[in-house]
Image (tube, rainbow, N blue to C red):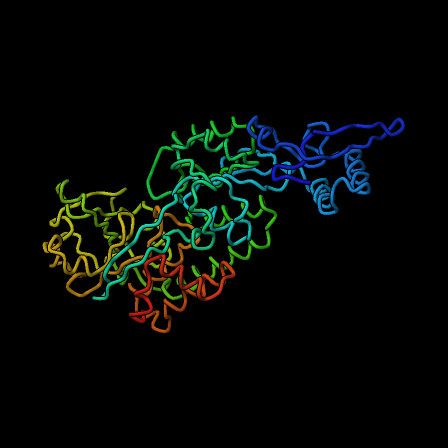
Length: 450
């Protein structure tokens, strides 16, 4: 019987004449071999991780005797025909994969897990790191005067694959750059996949050290993105990650389908906003509300033009960030009044925030002279864990596009579009798509008809 890490070498070799041999294939303890960093390829007798012609003949002979199933033999034949294969990851490292991944330790802010769900490979996740940690939190907020409260997971992958929140079944190794390597090794992975993209800026030194340590665990480590490099087309970075995942899981066609779906949403927005001249572009601010701001002498954090979300809005929605600085800066009411943008977006890095909060909370009374507040041009955004681009980056962009240029998107009902997008992306029914909408704290889309 094939185990998750493959057939190991508790075997008996019998010479057949001068040129061939018979290999009795049997199960062994996968965990012992995995913990020692050994790659175990089904049908491999000599430990070189490659199935030779003689080893394939031995497997065929063993199948005839009933020692392994026909499914096991088909798997060995598939590996013989397609492996080993070498891929070049985003760091330029050549990574050799010796068999189809079955036990995956994934470390990301959601992109890997959601893409695996779209591939139908979510049950291969045995370890996780980054953001998706177990435990549900009840979220309560008010939007347009209506109160909402639910404990639906914020992580899309947790709605699609609830088991991922079980930290006992799928151990959490820690945040990116701060992984517990013993936890990773203890999951007995046959591959580790890492995506380090996040909203902050970092020299990458921490990530690179972490990746180097993981490579010493003795299993293939694939890094999906260039570490700490944020220049260029940010959407292309997502497409490349999905493409690389398609190669890893032998799902190239599905990866292309996902990429085309993402591109379709981007093109849909661009086709409606690309002709806006510079002097007619709306200005925006990403305003991060937090209870910590007052104690630090400010009202809110503001995201600069080099932050990922700003790059996407400027390049796709065709609006301009009123704050031309870099990074994330704490600002006073006076500084914000000086910027005075046309519209304000409320991201979710510090929890769910809505226009009601900034319109009605006395903590923000000094901002009421802002045009965006006077004219009710403030919108909430999806609750997206760790504020990263994931496969849901078109959702924020679509909301921002319609809110910023409503006259150009009058025919688009975002609530309906959102369900349709997720149904196409994940192959799910409308009920599950509605659950994702709830998890993203976007029920208000339906109630407002936005």
